[in-house]
Amino acid sequence: MASDGAAVDASGAAAEVVDKQPHKLEKKWTFWIDNQSKPKQGAAWGNNLRKVYTFQTVEEFWCLYDQVFKPSKLPANADFHLFKAGVEPKWEDPECASGGKWTVTSSRSLPLKLCGLKH
Image (cartoon, rainbow, N blue to C red; front, side, top):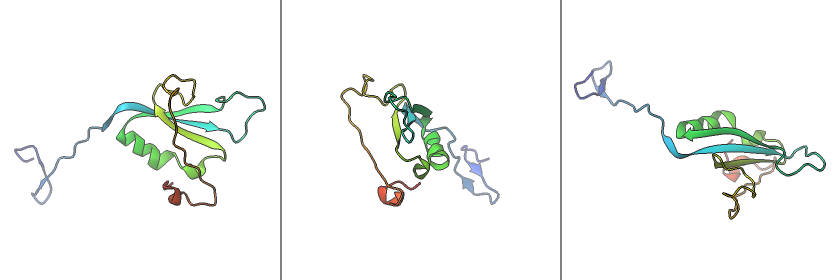
C-alpha cells in the first residue's frame, strides 16, 4: 500500500482506489406498470396499476435497466411509468394535477432501437 492511500498493483505501480460509495439521487423514484392488456369490464382506471420498484441510487437504476426491465417484453397496451416516490401516476394525485407527460409509443414491428430504447 502506498503511503498516500493509493493501492499498489503487482507490478509496483500505484493504482487509483475506486470509490465504492453508491451514487445517491436527490430523490427516490418508483417504476409503475399499468397492464391494460386484459381490462375488466367496468373496472375503474388504475385498478391494474402496480408499483414495481423504488430506487434511490444510480447503481440501482442501471441494475434495473440492464437486468430487469425490457420494454420489448411488456405486454401489448401496457404503460410503464416513472414517478418520484410517493407520487402515484394518477391525475388525482395533487403532485400531478397540473402536470403533463412524455409518451413513447412503439409497435412490435418497429425496432425499439429506433425509438431510442435499446432493450
